[in-house]
Amino acid sequence: DTSLRALAAQSGLRIGTAVNTDALASDDAYRSITATQFSSVTPENVMKWEVVEPTQGTYDWSAADRLVAFAEQNDQLVRGHTLVWHSQLPAWLTAAAPSMSADQLRAILKKHVIDEVTHFRGKIWQWDVVNEAFNDDGTLRDSIWLQKLGPSYIEDAFRWAHQADPKALLFYNDYNIEFTGPKSNAVYALVRDLKAKGVPIDGVGFQTHLDTQYPLPDLQSNLQRFSDLGLKVAETEVDVRTTLPVTPVEQNAQVGGYTSTLQACLAVRSCLSYTVWGFGDAYSWVPGVFAGEGAATIYDENLQPKPEYTALQQTL
Ligand code: XIL
Image (cartoon, rainbow, N blue to C red; front, side, top):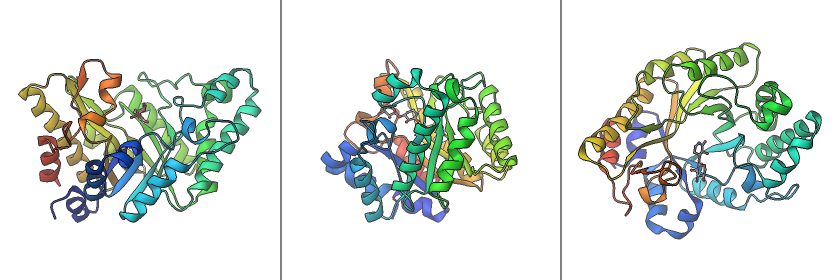
């Protein structure tokens, strides 16, 4: 068995993918690859607040429940994504938040975290409790959470999540923290302080959205310093985008990006999982967000494996 999941199992690593649940329902090839190549799944969108509580007080867990059931059938672990974020909030919340008091907004956030974690209790391996709370310069992002609640919303969220599912591993997750610099240093200081205060945080997720135009200097040593704090680490959203059309030089760089990010995780003992942010270039979020870029995943538009896939196989 040369599937990614079989090879990863030999190293005690989980290899995951973000899952587009519409594709999972409608595309047999997509469904088959999801089941056979990966040992962990992350809902690309269906556990986000705007999906699970489209109207205040009315939950819709149906899409997320279907993915959790799929994971159980296929002996996969689930990364829950994500509880507290500035993006993909329900419209009712974005509209009402500015005129709410801090106490009102805190109560709404607490209910969201506790209700969602409780709904999935026992079924989630790792939760991304707080996502993308920092700016690239290392200051805290000016979200409604920071504006109304101050920085303590972060530790509150971890405590609420732990209360609702004491066995789930609780992660802080962000992008552009793969290398050392102001942002990764700020996250490092945050999680070190949370640990020191006894806040229930178990790990840090490094999204790892790479672009062939930017270098990736020191991922392994950076993962190691977080690990040395007594935390788990994970690469949670790996993809390597480039400008289209792809040249052979760029594709080599993409292959190198997948190889070196996987090597870094394999080299750090506490790196629990390596998750790609979807597979199949036709399903990738990249072209919709980064103008002129794409080809960021390990399978092509027809769901045929690319050299990036082979690189992961050979690295495992
Ligand atoms: C993206 C999804 O891939 C898109 O389908 C959606 O439209 C927007 O969100 N960081 C994250 C993910 O933590 O939740 C984002 O996912 C990509 C960036």
